[in-house]
Structure formats: C-alpha cells, structure tokens
Amino acid sequence: MKLARKSHIDTRTGNDYATNEDLCKLFTEDITTLYLLCFMLTANHETAEQCFVDGLDDCMNGNSVYKEFARSWARRRIIQCAIRVIAPGVQHTNSVLNVWSRSEESASLTAILELDTFERFVFVMSMLEGYSDQECSLLLGCSRGEVVTARGLALRRLSKLDIAHVSPFAGASIHTADKAQTLNEGEQ
Image (cartoon, rainbow, N blue to C red; front, top):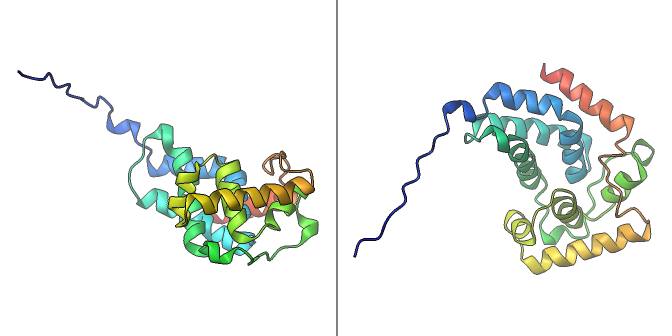
C-alpha cells in the first residue's frame, strides 16, 4: 500500500525576505520602542545602546528572515544580545545593575528598572514581549519553575506600586526618547 505524500513547494520569492535596507528601516522606524526594550532589560543607557547596535548587526549579518517576521525577529535578537551581555541567570536574583537617575523615567519604567536583574528579564520577556515560560527558560538557561517564581515576585513588587498593568512603552519619558533619537542620528 502506497501512502500519498504531500509535497510542499515554497512559492515565496527572494523578495519575501527582509533585506538589510528593510532591517535598517525597521530599526529607524521603531527606534524608540526597540531602545526602550534594550533599556528595560539592561537598566543602563550605555549597555542599552550596545545591545541596540548589536541587535541590528545580528539581524543584518544573521540568518535571512521573512519580511513579515522581521519586527519580531529584531526584538528577539535584542533580547538575546541583552542576555549575552548581562547574563541574567537565577544567580543574579539579588543583583541590581541600575545605572540611571530616577528623575529621568516614568513611574512604571522606574519600577521595572528597580526589579532584580533576573526578575526584570523574566517580567519584560513574559509579560511585555509575550514569551512563554518555556521560551523564557530556554533563552535564560533556567527551569520553567524559576521563570514562574521570578515573574510572580516581579508582579508582586509591581502590584504594590499599582503599576503592573501599565505599559512602559506608553509612558516612555522624553529622556529615553531623546536617547533613542541620539542613537538614531549616530547610526546615519
């Protein structure tokens, strides 16, 4: 008995892949939110700039990606760069690497930046970026249970300030936006 096999033919053309120009345009258009993602993860403007540039470089020199996935791919590359630079393993639960002035940022962003390093990464990845517990655990090199625990701690700390439901992207401060604009001008 012969089993019928379906053959899949990819009808996409080379034009369906994001070019370097497409990726540069994406990073330019989304500079504020991409930089803010870098800053929330690293809690340091200099390190955030480094992750932003490294993320762009990784996107441009890495695997080809379909145009429709370029935005999410760019965000993932930035997260991976931040993980590589900060190494936010569970052992960093009590370390806070914040090098910023509280007066610079919105209340919700300030509260996120005050989270312990590992909790901050888990919160940003799972709650703001929508990563599953499994994805977080794989990228962060920890167990799903550690992700669940860290997210719970982060949510408890943020709920005490009644800002867990506030998106820092909506309340990005002028300073953070200015920092992103400066970075954008330096890229051109």
